[in-house]
Every structure is written in structure tokens, then in C-alpha cells.
Amino acid sequence: MGSFSIWHWLIVLIIVLLIFGTKKLRGLGSDLGGAVKGFKDGIKDATAEDKPAETAPPPQPQQVNDAQTIEGEVREKTRS
Image 1 (cartoon, rainbow, N blue to C red):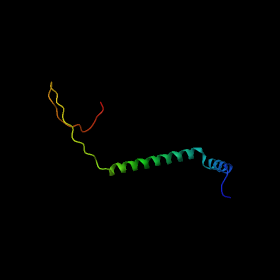
Image 2: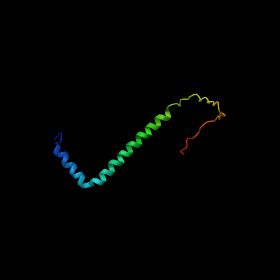
Image 3: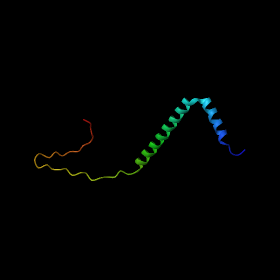
Image 4: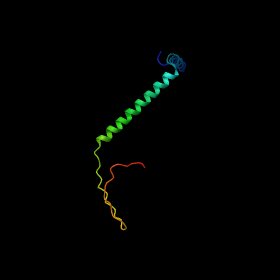
């Protein structure tokens, strides 16, 4: 009465497939996988927010001998 054999588990699997169908079980698996992925991303974001931001020294402007030097700071990278 303790453990089940492989035949018991196969019968249970067949009954579950007949009741729910493969489409519902596939959807359930993808929903569960998405939830686990979202949970992992949330944990990763939370641990990244807990760490203090490392401050790097500001980059030194480069000088060009031939032309004028334009000093500035890039705030956002854009695609062209």
C-alpha cells in the first residue's frame, strides 16, 4: 500500500489527459512557466535595487587638435 508502480502512474496520467485534454494542460504549463519567469525577474530586480549604485568618475573630455572641442554629456542613446 506504500508506493505505486509505473502502471499506476500511467493510468493516472491517462485519466488526467482524458479529463483535461492536452490543450488545457499545455496552456497550464505555459502559464506556470511564465509565472516562474516573472517571479525570477522580480527577484533579480529587487536585489539590483538593494545594491548601492557604484559611482564612476566622470569621463574626461577628449580634445581634438584640428577642430573645436565640444564638451557635453550624452543623456540618451538614440537609433538612427
